[in-house]
Length: 356
Length: 264
View 1 (cartoon, rainbow over the protein chains, first blue to last red):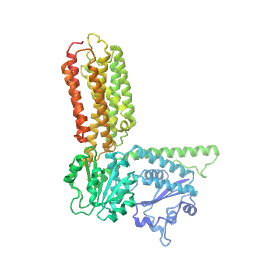
View 2: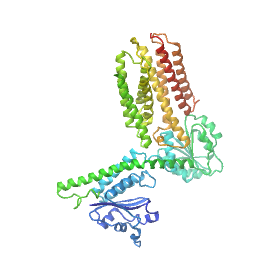
View 3: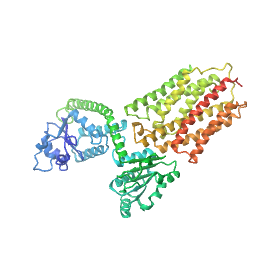
């Protein structure tokens, strides 16, 4: 019995190549066309991967033919960017993928949900059997352990997530924070959505065009306030997200000083994503004010990524332990089942430890 | 014999310190497990030491500077255990352990464990006064630790330089709430300690009374400043560190002068 995986990812192929192999096949169709015993298909924006178990060797071309979207494309042309991992290396690869080590943004957690979805879809269609069940279940366990025991998923790497992360470091529960969004552009919307998704209930939007403010407020579940009133709102606001097209700073130490006197023991977190900046940089020197402009946010994101990269070795050690244990347990299980039943439970040939 | 209990206790706290340093350097710090058990175990050995010493003395073991330091270290550990899971499970344990190691390490090394030539008679008011005052010091010590944590977190947020430790420290507002809570606890206990001092039946030395009232006024000013918002949170955190340093120096002075004068 051979366990293998093959696929394309952002490491080996550009998006133009990847999209040629995305969307047409299902685990079930690959199962039917290739003679594999079990198949699971993992498709994300960054990868197309097939995990399969077969009794005889199935070539990469055979699988590529199933995946290709247009029949006029010769999959052989695409064979070079396909990577293929057999047995133990396949186990290692899936554990790394599920743990986010193979992702474009190291440590991102979406991949775990996508892997779960891929396995669930293969299981319900009958394409995944006991081998892949054990493999994927262990992969999910490993991913969880890696996230719990290392800082691989720590820190944020996008404007929205950096804003949420920093707000949580300042305020703890951000659901009780009052947020003011100045400007109704795309980044303000994404940042506002990130805060709303973490439980923020009081979100106000101010924009020079009141219609656009109302539109954004409605889209994110906040309320629009007049642009002339935003300064007065600052007295009770905890988080300000500003991204207007103003040529001159909207907020200066002189404007903030009287407001801060009324709110000395409550911090004020300002995210200035406008270029040119909406907030005078010297505001950050004021007591209890934490100002992050776009460069500061980028720097935090880079620090988070660097921190995550430092964690790769620790994560790899956990994964290596699990790979060895998984290979050992699956080969022991097969030896036992072949001894008791007189034949292997999952095929004619027992799975050799060297293969898995 | 009782010193062995103290050595084991110090080793437990030291283990928490070493574990924290190693894990922080490796970037895999998980505060809730090892540190909590190490500090808990250290606290048990501290308690055993105080119990053995107390039985031997026939009174609360606060008869010399050595015992005062150990009682203070015990109070710090006690406050850490009581301060509540949200804070205990954060880095606070890792910050508490070095302070306890310093206090106990110094007490073990310095020649300050002088036995009184005559057995000190038991005086419940005096023991209550001394022990409650030291427990109050424990609360002030923890407020000082929370203050250090606040300043570290605040500095990282201001400078936009976020290190691994940033993700393990509690949020600023939680730390500030903890500082306030500990200051109130410490202040209430210290007030109780000072008031009970007047019921001991002994004339109180002027220098001790002045020092004790000085510490009380210092913390009263910090709390008043915090309540009336005279001080920004960063200044409250800084004053907690200054306040505890002053209080510790005065405690030393009080004990030193107490040991210099004849027993009642």
